[in-house]
Image 1: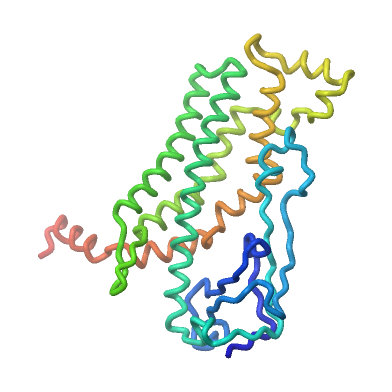
Image 2: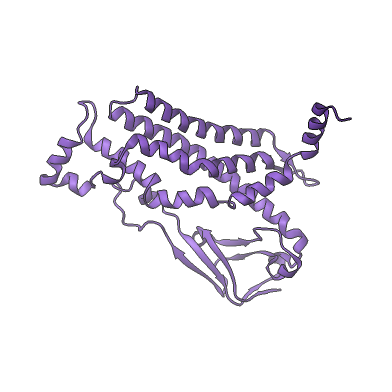
Amino acid sequence: MLKLHDFCNRAITAASLVHELVVMPTKGMRPEEADYAVSFSIPVNTPGVSIINRSFAPAELNEFDYPASSHHSMPEGFVVFDDVFVPWDRVFLAGEVELASVLARSLGLWERTGGLVESVRNGELYIGLAQLVSEMQGKDKDPVVQSSLSELIVYQEMIRMGLDYACEHYETSQPSGMVFPNTLAVNATKYYLAANFHQTIKYLHDLAGGLVITVPMEADLRNEESGKFIRKYLYTRKDVDIEARMRVYNLIRDLTADAYGGWWFVVALQSGGGLPAQRTMMNRTFDMEKAKAAARKAAGIS
């Protein structure tokens, strides 16, 4: 059996929503870290397991004002193992430090692949919102707007192409024959995603303007006194509905500058490990000998 005393996993997304907790190392371990080179799977209601939850958004958020957070709040669990018994048939790793990095790399690969899939979907959404908010302002043909839109498109398409490449040029484990995405491509694309996310979102904020954080709430729109001013001063064109315009601004704010947006700003960077983790994997998986050979040949070195 495996006995866990004073053991903790931090920031485990959706820990309280699952039936089983699969625990594994997130990095390679040194010999003196053998106590932490453990991996196992246990039911979430195992005696001694505690989950301290927090969420970025309360459940009662208004859908009009919080179109993303009212639907997509994700609990983050601070998972504590206090004197937990784990049967041997559920133990995958128990102090074998030399194998810890194998599990860590596998976890990181699939975490990063999932992040790429979600980012492609989000990227299309950011582009659509940027186009809508520009059209509602009557500025969609403006060269500055077109330039900012192209930046958003390049970011989204680079991630999509990286994900496509990783899947098309898949690798196969031996001897099991299990298929998995190209490790170098996944890590390089995830690095690009995380390193450029924050500066890319600025193009959406720049197009939308200050109304991203100053647009009134639904209660103000429905109020007879304040509502008449909102409908008057948010008017841009006859074919632009005021309520629709507010909904676009609310989604931009919620996705990129409020509850859900704040969570995603951290997740985009840290999900599957921060930038150093991707740098490490790129250095390990890149064919450096091939590159050196090409350099020698180009330099005329036999």
